[in-house]
Amino acid sequence: MPPPHPPEFRCRAVELARTGDKSVTALAKSLGISQSVLSNWIVRRASKKATSTA
Image 1 (tube, rainbow, N blue to C red):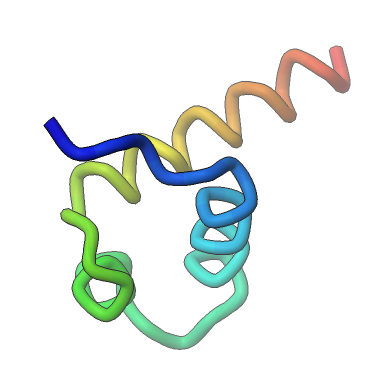
Image 2 (image 1 turned 90 degrees about the horizontal axis):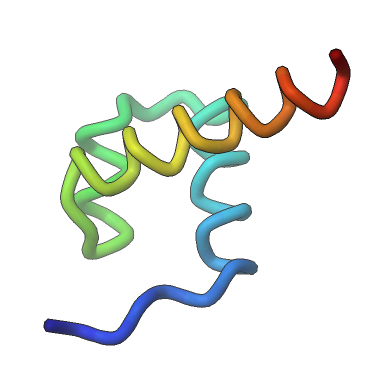
């Protein structure tokens, strides 16, 4: 199993997915990760924001 990506990498990837013009699939490919990994990070970030603002 590969080592986990650092939190900074995850945060930047999610920000690029939210604000960039690439699809999640294209962005994930360019970052060298799978689309499902990036999608999971996006969902986790959204749920953290939802619980922190509640």
